[in-house]
Image: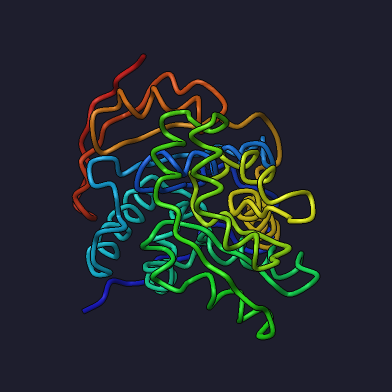
Length: 292
């Protein structure tokens, strides 16, 4: 028997809602999404969970990714969030429909907002999408783009080395520039006028990518597009926090040291503490607080 669908937190037209927003990724990359949300919605309280013990998701089966995503959603639901954002391209492509079936609060992924922004932005109808091998293999971005405009021509490229470059901080040196040129030469030759950054790590390489492709190519950051889509959803359902300054809390499923070390690079602010948790589905969670 499938579980009863939880009631939607926050009725439409409600004056405001102080509960946090849950943001989930397989690792640290989703902090770029969290940063965009914090910048656009500074009043909101944010709760971030990085499943660092089980990263990367790109090598996992759809069944496994769905199970991980459900555990994360239950983690957030148990803590009373009013909305969830899947800040992971792989999990967005695989698990978003399942989560929307089970939970009636607003749940957003990063694929649909990025694709919608690109479809709106392109002039010549030629759109490039870059991401990890798993995200490109899923076909999620082409499907989302074509659902908005069936006439769009789509050019995709997997760029797996962009992730370690971003985490290493090598985003604007000779190595980064050479890798960018190697990966994106075919997209540049194809004449795209819009490029979607289909991985949450890639905004860190945005300047190098933009310089290589030139000023006539618009770069679509899925993180920023997702933040705007979240604001729209919260406003529609009367869930925006009306006042005050929001705070962010961080959870990880492995030791927090590396996450905290990389946090400033991806989030733009210091991540001074994170709580390690053990995901146990709906049965409960355990962990200890580690401060830096």
